[in-house]
Length: 603
Image 1: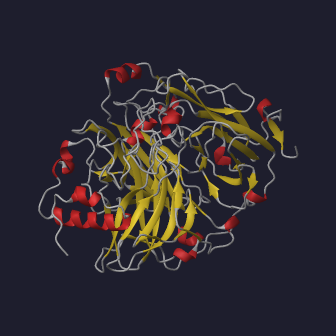
Image 2: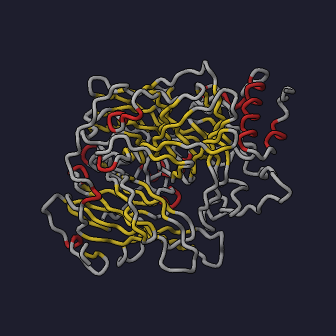
């Protein structure tokens, strides 16, 4: 085989076959790494606010693991930002001023004590806004949120939505504040699986998450829920999006057709081309190894030949959908799904060996999957890709592209984490299975969008998530009057309609839910989720696309005030969020009563 020169990348990138293209690019990376340096991509960490990024085509490393000791995990984070030579802003959680976005590993019952020191560099405008903050007891704040404000949301955990635990409505940590302490216990009955942490400041969530502010949190013990994975090595992959590194580049031609015309929305994101290709709205990275448009030099994942591994994969993107697939010699491979959104897929916790084999897995922004994969044979050409996702005519463009070349080597390093070989089974659940519960009422909510100027396709857009029967309004952080009030102990059905021409990802804090029907068709999918895709409307036909979700408010930890929203953070920041209050059992509220749009389950 003729050696591939370091200037051959653009030729390789024109190869159409994804598996062969990725394998060739991986070889190009190995060859070129021996004759060149990573240049500006390997900047001195001490000179950066955020110590990244790994070079394109680099081997994917594992995030550092921080584990509880004697039932306690103590973490001190500094939160920083920096701007690189291309003008892109990064945000990062740093442990010991050098370890970025470590994986937090805890067991049920463990205490997490996390302190956060905000060291963001504020703009003059944010500094002015900061001067109008009003302190609340215990260090939480209320009032104007600025670009230099931050906080932490512990996505998927069922911990109380109160100050110092998982409050995002009032907790705003400012530069110059003393380190802010989060302190809570992982509930004893928290399902084992993959959760994550990220900032949740209204109006700034997209910028900070797009800048890389995210990390994995694992409640350990998945092998106790499903012994099929016992003894397997575990790997954590965090897939993030970021602004295009090469925004002016044209898509690489793969046939005689010209690349599709690039259209942008008012926020500057590239609209769906409808072709499955073209320029993406955002670049992607895997554990911070960038996979940038237009050449898509893949990262490298090394495994031992034919080795089975358990992969915990997080879509930490701000706006990008993923449809994950593993290819070997360009043929899709089956992946064994064990958990979704942090919860094992075992039906009502009883059937302990359940696996769902899929050739691809769709993950909306914030979605997580735990799955069994098998490494390829030595010498096989294998890759980990995301397929094109049709986000609708008003949605962003998420084309087919690689994430990593999977290279099988006999001496590949074993992952640091190995699941227990002889786990003690989890105790049976103490509450009846959610799918067996009768909902006390049904509500309907719907997504809508309103351009400022309907005659201008580039006009800024307002985003709404409205309870049927209420007036659509943008989320206002100064108005904490809840849109919905429920009683702790209740189970409800929520119908979520999409009346827009782009995908939305519905998410609610503090709880998980079960999908009971899709577009009016009943489903038998006894899995719990916290984020779900809602299909886009074609602009003509009725009824609107919808999902019906069984919402679980039985846990006492849900008592308090929290939010539900679209997890495309551009939409959340643009107003697509509502407030729910869960009142203690026995406390009455007029909004608990059924009305025309809050129907009893017997309706």
